Image 1: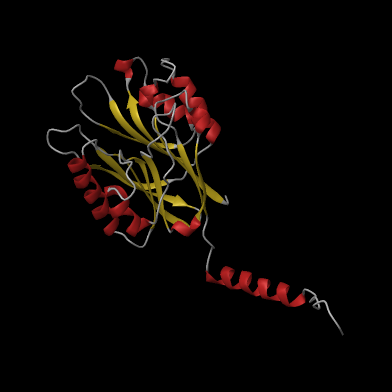
Image 2 (image 1 turned 45 degrees about the vertical axis):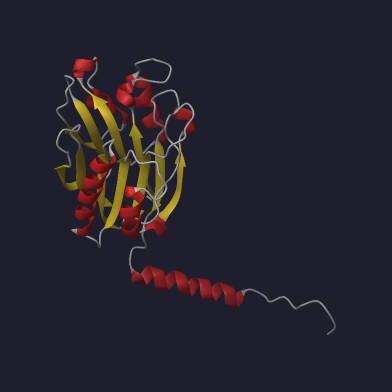
Length: 258
């Protein structure tokens, strides 16, 4: 495996922009994008006509699944999921709810990635500024607890402002992260859905998936993350090989009189 693909997507309870309630469309989209790690928000349960968690598990056969459901004023299961093709060493669910606001959770896991352990934190932050301030602070405390591990943070942060709370607090710790416009899917204006990875130099490419525009009111975001060198000896061998190649190449004389 030369890279790890991460996906974050708010699936809007499988309700598409064309008014269709279509879980299978969401499942096909995720399967086609072939993520190794997927953070999915607004997952509904049987009370809404479908076992959303089961549908999502089917989109990534063999992946380990962690659900973080919340009690809402509406009836039924509602929450988020982390799906990982990479073996999960351990995980926990962190309550980042604010009183009198909609309940929120973060899933904090450590997976076995190529090259070593990778921490994965996925979440769905609140709509109010004061609420997000508390929740971003909670995420920063989680990050401070283990600053040395490779770390992936992803989810719907509900913060579109350049230099907003999420960027101001997370970028100094994780790097710049994505800023693709993801909402509303029909005419995306706001970068609500984000991916950060530390060390940021290993992020190969990121993109927003415009072709998924009918399936939800948010667009998915994916990031391909390169695997680290296995050890220092490999780095030294690559450096030596580069030096030998540059020495063995013929030099070109400059044009002019000889």
